[in-house]
Image 1 (cartoon, rainbow, N blue to C red):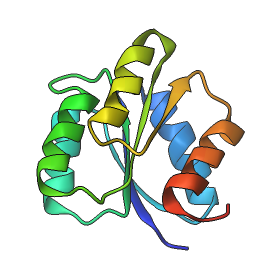
Image 2: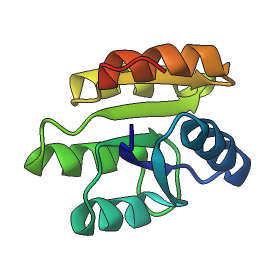
Image 3: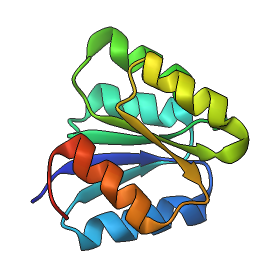
Image 4: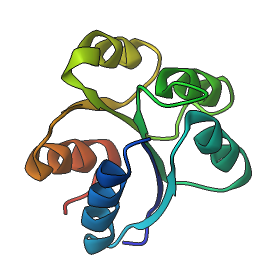
Length: 122
């Protein structure tokens, strides 16, 4: 498959779990631990999709989403956030996110969202 994606989450264990699962499915994964780092990478590198946590240091995932959408309306973006940020996740759809998933999540749930957003079968 070889799709190149960015996974941005300030929780290292979440980043690693998503990265491991995606790499096992054939994705090339780049990670970021802050919103600002994610935005810098999106501005300087090519990605086929992005996974953004809502609550991150320096810049929220929603702020990153808004900045990305000013320049690119087609880049697939999946918001990943805690259930306490459910309203923000739902609101992210109005701001241009393609999908969201609430933590804690099961891989099968995220897999379904990935298949839908990327139009692939894992």
